Image (cartoon, rainbow over all chains, first blue to last red; front, side):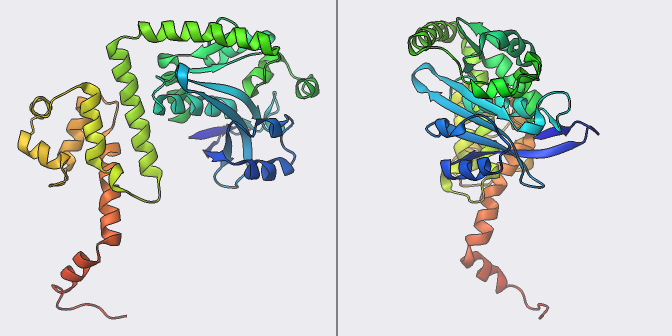
Length: 154
Length: 172
C-alpha cells in the first residue's frame, strides 16, 4: 500500500495499524491532528503509518455493526499537513476508507461500509469514493468496496 | 463543530477528500437514520445473488490469507489445507469434483487436505486459474511456505537427523 508524495509523485510505502487508546495519546501529543479523538476511544482505532519514518498521517475510528453486517466509519482525519492543495501526501483518506472496506469483507459483511455525512459534503463523498445514498446515510456495497480496495490498497 | 470551523479555509471538496467528520444529528435523528439504513441494508442483502455472495466470500478468503502471510508466527489453524478446505466450502464443491476440475487425483487432493503430503507449485497455478485469478498462485504458495518456515525453525529432530548424514562440514 502506498500514498503519493504530492511534489514529486513518489510512491511512499505505508501500513495501517490498529491502535490502542495509549498509542492514540502518544500520536496526539505530536499535535498533528485537530479532531477530538479522545471521544472515540471506545471505537476501533486505526492509524496510517509511513513505514520509512514512522510518521502517522491519518487516523480512523470504526464501529462494527454486527447485526446489520456493516462497518461504520465514525471519524477519519488526515493530518494537518495533508489537507487542501498544498498537502504533502495524496490518497491518505482513500487508503483508510479502503481498509475499512477490506475489514468489511474479512468480517463477512460483503464489503458493506457506511458513514453518516455532513449534508453539504454528501456529493463530494459520492464523487470521490463512489458512496451511494442509503436514506440519510452513505454506503458502499460489494462491488464499489472491491473497487476502492483495488484502487487504494493494491 | 470546532474542528470544521478551523478548517474553514478549505473548500468542501478538499475537506471531503481528507476527512470524514462525525455527524451533527441529534440522538433521535441518528436513530431514525440508522433504522432507515438497516431497512435498506437488509433489502440489499436479500437481493444479493449466490454468485455475488460467493465472490464476496472468496475476497474474504483472499484477505484472510494475506493477513496470515503478514503474521510473524504460524499455527496449525492457519495451514494451507485449512484455507483450501474453506475454498471448497465457499464454492460448495465436493473433493472429487474439485479434483477433477483441476486435473488432480482425488486421493492426492485428500492427502493434501489432510496434511499427509505437501502441495507443489503446479497446484498453486491451478488454484489461481480455478479462482479466475482472484487468489494468485503466489499467495497460495506464500501461505504454504509459512508452515515450511515454521517447521524448519522448530523441527530439531529433523535437523539433527539430517546433520548425521553430513560427513564433512566447514568449521568456523
